[in-house]
Amino acid sequence: MQTSAVTFATKMRAHVALASADVERSIAFYSELFETEPTKVRRAVVEAGEDAAVASGTAIYAKFELAEPPLNLTLNFAKDAPKQRSPAHFGVQVKSTGEVMTKRATMARAGFAARAEVGVGCCYAVQDKVWFEDPDANAWEVFVVTEADIPEHSRPAVSVEGTAGVGIEASTDEACCSPGCCA
Image 1 (tube, rainbow, N blue to C red):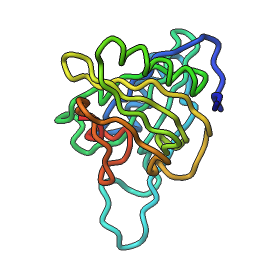
Image 2 (cartoon, rainbow, N blue to C red; image 1 turned 90 degrees about the horizontal axis):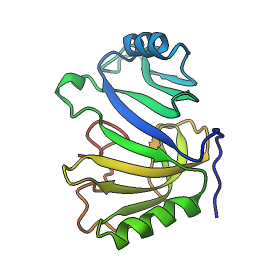
Image 3 (cartoon, rainbow, N blue to C red; image 1 turned 180 degrees about the horizontal axis):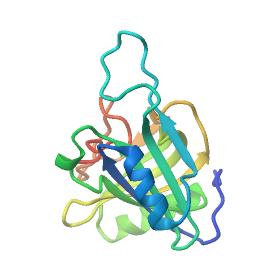
Image 4 (cartoon, rainbow, N blue to C red; image 1 turned 90 degrees about the vertical axis):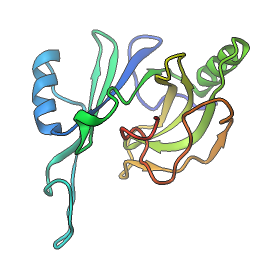
């Protein structure tokens, strides 16, 4: 059983992923709102001659991990963010893979389909997670971070199980937590 590679004081904390057309401005806004700086920021690396949506060095991802209120808020660059469904998804971060799978089982008993991903690279971390949709098609993930920091934003899961009845399909074209990944 995997345990969390990150620590937080509560048993669980909420997770919200937002699409942002200007991550730098969003960092300034949320830093002011929450009275703290982000715990992780990733910047674009653009090779000479490469056509890119943002300039090299521009923030493309930021994470705020708040103790009060217990929240994991991520900002993900999307050049057309105002047109995106925002928030991209919601989540609950827990402390072990066992808790992820327990939630999957309890939701299944209640009649909610799920998709589980083990060892998936997401938001510059490795996670075990399970995805659900609420009755209004809002995407929710229950996840544990098993490796807190990897160089790439996303990588395929070691295993994926159970997509029937869940509109959240695995994709090789979309990065995890990108505004279109879960819709």
